[in-house]
Length: 314
Image (cartoon, rainbow, N blue to C red; front, side, top):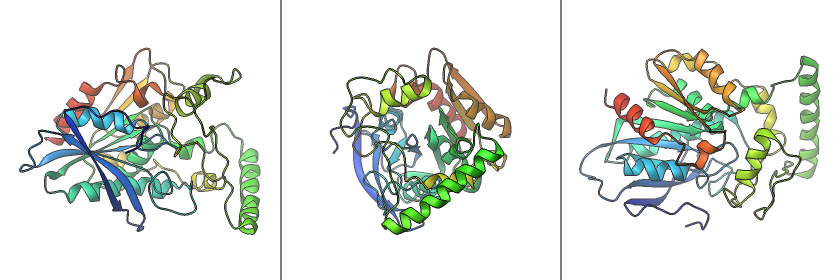
């Protein structure tokens, strides 16, 4: 077990698991449940997706630890091409593959004899919020979705650029493919240091300062998540809209959770507007984007529990 993962509550169990997505890539996961879970009965289950660029030890373990104590069977995982999961070359990102990883979690949970296949939900943190919504739009087995500090990476790939700037960016990334082909491996430039930093650069502001504080310091640093993806991964997000079909999740419910101070809140506002009912949003006071990754004093676990139990038991 990684030294970086959150200490497990004494009343919870965590088991390493491995299973394939539909592309045949093996995903490394951790399965959580309470120690007193009656496995002769069927229970509600939840897949928890990591922040974009993160792994199961960064945020998902906080949610899983808590939700397991509240009676859920919870699965966390490393996205394919990342962490302990399979996929070569490393650090490749794809909107379709990352959404598929959520559905692969449904496959795995639904094969457990003590999980009710009709009561499986998805929780997505940051970028996984967008992936969870995209997965649920196609996969009707996902009966409810919760997003925390949701980021739509397909919107982020184009945001703030003019048509001309988009074309220049595509040209630069397309030409990078020639370089990658000649080198025999795609370019990957990490965002964060290999060892945890002790100081945050003074020139970092806003959400970029938050990201550095989480990913690059002892708060959330993990050697399997040094930030960024292969350079040309961005092209697939520029050519793919994750949440065009979000309204088709209805009548299954969505809960959006955002920090009052989060610069990323507009992603949730946009998705909320496009989603059909039933939907709701919780705005957490005095809370920024990354606080919803790991701050148990701000993550509204009771509201999440109530939302899931109310809707999965319908």
